[in-house]
Amino acid sequence: MPAPVEQTSVDPSRNGSAPANPGTDATRPAPGPQALRPHAEDAFAAELAALAAQDDRPRPVRWRLSPWAVATYLLGGTLPDGTVITPKYVGPRRIVEVAVSTLATDRALLLLGVPGTAKTWVSEHLAAAVSGDSTLLVQGTAGTPEEAVRYGWNYARLLAQGPSRDALVPSPVMRAMAEGTTARVEELTRMPADVQDTLITILSEKTLPIPELGEEVQAVRGFNLIATANDRDRGVNDLSSALRRRFNTVVLPLPETPEAEVDIVSRRVDQIGRSLDLPAVPDGIDEIRRVVTVFRELRDGITTDGRTKLKSPSGTLSTAEAISVVTHGLALAAHFGDGVLRAGDVAAGILGAVVRDPAADRVVWQEYLETVVRERDGWKDFYRACREAGA
Image (cartoon, rainbow, N blue to C red):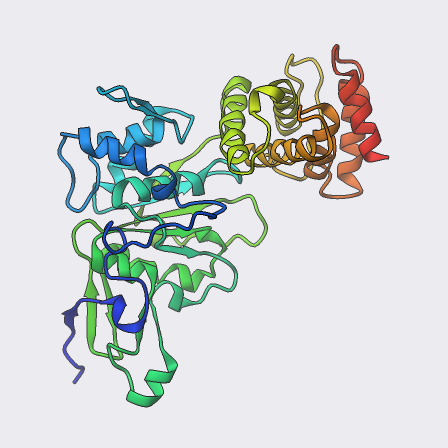
């Protein structure tokens, strides 16, 4: 006769892991002064505090902010006291509202989109605004084991004592269930199908059985899960229909207009540049527009004016890659130039982003240079720089 299954709570502090409620200010360790990329809840702590102080709307159980305030944190705005909340996501407001309202239910959220559409960025900021902690993260890869989603064991204690609560090592998902906070699973479709399906019981029954102990962890109110996925990269494992039904899927699109994409690249590069003491973005706004134009035209397979059809390269040429190209260009300008972003600073980065397949992509790039860039008014310096980079 099987052992009875009893509800149990998990105290991560008993096995040397993070404290039971890492989102609280009293227990959460302060970020180091030299952190290259602070977590969202640390980098934007002042904005989150200002929102919490003026947020008088109803909040779901264990939420740091109301759904309205979470959306304001993501989309930006000005509070009644004049505090400016910077936009974290530039896109349709309805997408953010649907994502936030999903987290306020018992249904998990799946952020779906092509690579570079800010899925991870949005996921992190949602968790930071809802729970004050974006670090309960499972990174999906082809080698992600089932223990990363469920739980593992401290094998020294397991051998010495046998299966016990002290020997159990909770996963980020288990901790989020016990604490009523938000867990994140990045690149869900990169995980093997059998590991993905470990989430089915968690999301449908809101329990995580521990057969070795005859116990289970039941999710407390406030728990939810945000997953990200794309279907463009190699190594993708399709979600089973049973798992997909457990998610409310929100598709994050590519920026609709060149102006919107330029704005996104400029804002993000400015944030990264300040942390690296690089030149201000306005000094290179013209080059940012050119990088965005090149990426959009090759991505769409047609020039901006609609007159010339183009071959598209094998890469995605996402907004995230444009941010990387511009950031690298700013570093070149700062350390080996006059501090102003110019065509020569971004040419090598663009070449590296476009030419992923040395044979096919190089042909696509050369045709684009000779038929479009060469003939475009005001782009002579860009054409020469790209030719030199590819020589």
